[in-house]
Length: 307
Ligand SMILES: NC(=O)c1ccc[n+]([C@@H]2O[C@H](COP(=O)([O-])OP(=O)(O)OC[C@H]3O[C@@H](n4cnc5c(N)ncnc54)[C@H](OP(=O)(O)O)[C@@H]3O)[C@@H](O)[C@H]2O)c1
Image (tube, rainbow, N blue to C red; front, side, top):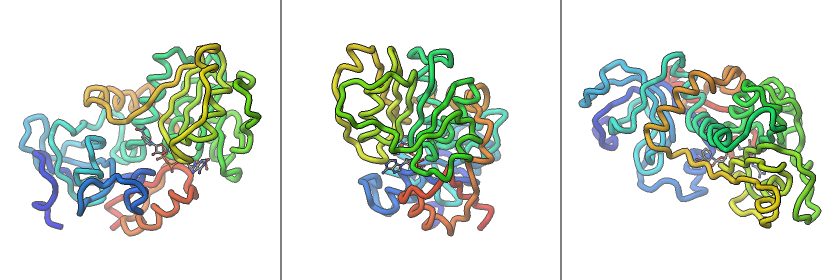
């Protein structure tokens, strides 16, 4: 593909890194209707340096991040050496963050930061009690565990991968429990266990979470790795005041910029080196299959300098 064939925009970026997200794997394998044009350069986030800019806000050599706005869906995304984007989508790399860290975080890090910010705005605080993170070895969940632990929360990681317990404890989880820990007794309410919960999974886990929240507990729902539907009843909401927050990464650019600044500051994860590993562009095909089979712990990042 020549640069002229890339989708339009006034900023050309030489892409250094692009991460592998669940959504990218779904796109690559045609498992959900994500690609809205064809051909499409997939990849929903990227980090790199401005090669050329017709917008005064950016100049050649500036380090930048691009994600959302239909990237990797209806606009050519990160899995290429170059991308062309409208300047209004481009976020300057915050001080204190490397390009690799930006990509290791990517959409997953932005989603985790958005969710945690919303939860704290809704009253979550370390003193309120334990926070459960399910799909714990996933990209968003791994970063969320790291950030929450760094902020002093007692994090309980729920995972289908018993062999990854040490990885999860290394990120700061105080307890690791298996997926089979969920009660399915058909009760309207379970014992109140969690002040907060981040749900990557949906389905039966989401149903159980809603029933297991403490008074005024806060759930952030951002994923559907096990399915989009969940069964529920209103008692957690009307008897315990449980708050169910929807999390969508497609924020206005001002909020995106604010959250990226926080990801370089008070929300900076302490263990990105354990969470993310570099892969070659040629490894992408295998990376998609492994992600969809839930065999990956953490994040995979395409490093274009590896060839
Ligand atoms: N709302 C938004 O804006 C937004 C943004 C980013 C991502 N997402 C969504 O968030 C979810 C996680 O994304 P991600 O990139 O972190 O994906 P990921 O790295 O593939 O993580 C998903 C994790 O969910 C668990 N899981 C997978 N299949 C499962 C199943 N059938 N039953 C129960 N658990 C299962 C696995 O963790 P364990 O093996 O440890 O249990 C897996 O590692 C996806 O649904 C994605 O589409 C939404």
